Length: 306
Image (cartoon, rainbow, N blue to C red):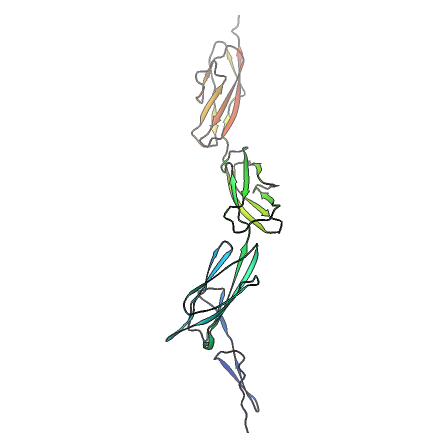
């Protein structure tokens, strides 16, 4: 007498028949493919006609997964859902239409969560995986995000009041200013030079090891540059032209000459000077960004020969 036995390893309909002397062993394969709708989701491609993609929405420390059923030409199949959130919590349910499952994580950390959607006798099973990293949120306030070369600015990191995680003191702040220098503390002061754009980072760590990082951008404007003779000579009572050249910075420029005595103007670029004796004149040049430079010229006055 010939005996036949069937061993169903997994509840699918794709079988490989192995003929033995007295037995026929029916091995059912479980082929999965990556879902075209979501690369994190694995779908049994032989028995699933259409499955709604699992969509993920992250809001602060909470994740919402929208999970739907499987569809066949003549029916929609209700599916059993098991969600392992990776923090010791497991959620189960059934879906016959797109359904939201929301979970909020407590504390900092990296959580790996998985979803198994089993559509019962249809043999349609999908697996989904996701990752959520919860860190300390930060805001960075900068006293002047567009300073001039050589300006001192103040930077301060703050945890927003609406944060879903309250850091445990004491907090440690580490600053990378993006110019090759670092500092600790909060707030901090820093001077940037030369002109350019700098991308910095601040990292805060609390007593539990929970951390958060935030980037900031500083755009440093160049100061105007001047060309002015060190010394001009004249005979009394002659007049001499102070010829000032300005470049770099952002035009238009404004000028302020001091002292104001014996000058044809104190706010022009090239005043005439006629001091009766040796005098040092100073000029402050300010560009359109408010950046300044200061220069000077010495007027050497010779008396008229006897």
